[in-house]
Image (cartoon, rainbow, N blue to C red; front, side, top):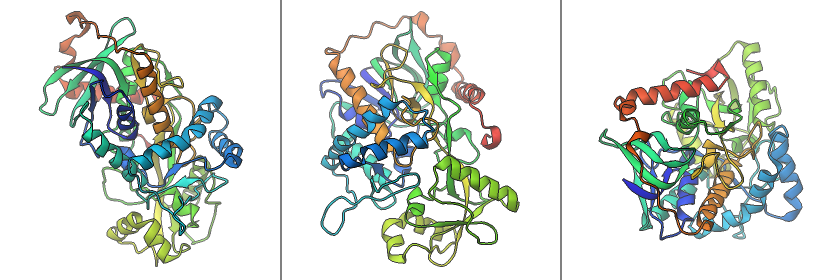
Length: 430
């Protein structure tokens, strides 16, 4: 199997990158599950945009402060300055953002933001954006989409990537030879007991990097979302109660129904406060009150959240809901530069699996979709700027030990094991 460019992951970063590559390039996008089972589809809150120059300094400061000033300043500037063009691209793809009574884009606010700068589509912004990108990718003659196809390993020689070893949907193991390979395979939530992520997102890119001595960065920087719906039922993932709910006025209460914290603190600070209150109260959750938001606004802005809570037995217009922190986002990952280039030649990384330093120690709410799209496009432009796509050299048999992949389930289990060895925070790990 051969392709010009192999993209591992079908979330917003992988699709957006594919759409910005030359139409003359054969692009293959693979995903471990179906095309819609990516965390990009789950993003509720929204996507940030620099709406006016007067907000630049505040936006920059909000991002840096949330990241404990461990962010890469250049990455932050690139993200913010590129936001307008990204939004124009999305509008051209047909993304339907909320508008005000005058037909202008409407902006909301979330925790740790000093201004309203977040565009949204109800409470399913990620689905709206990613589904539009997927529609465009399906129309592109040069893009091939392969579902239920897992990367077991990459193929490398002398610190150069030549593609990957794949397990196809029928269980067969094959190699995919590529001139360029892009990791866009998401985070590590599948390794955690409580996570908002899909279970199949287990850090495959990190495992490959560890096996092939590819540079990594900030693997211990794992964001916990403060508010997910508490349940004693076993679920594939935890249901997220969006940051935007608190941005619109929702309150958090202890077991005595007393407010105990500023709900708009950065996520890590709010999570710490909730854990402390749970320990103080000897309870497995705290209460979140959405009744502070007018019912019409709740129904219009957060219909998915309202419906899911109702399905779980809670009427958010009449009662509080139990919430608990859960693993949400991975700020660390494959070390990249400002064009998504990794320490291995012909290998790029974008989206949550990559770490260019933009988020620092803690991601600011609604920067994830924006960062993923900004640097995915920059990676595509960098590949395009190289001119003619070099012909991938013939992969020699000695480069691949097929015996290593005879038991593919064991390979996947070993990938999980070596990633777990590298990340900390055992409190929530399986």
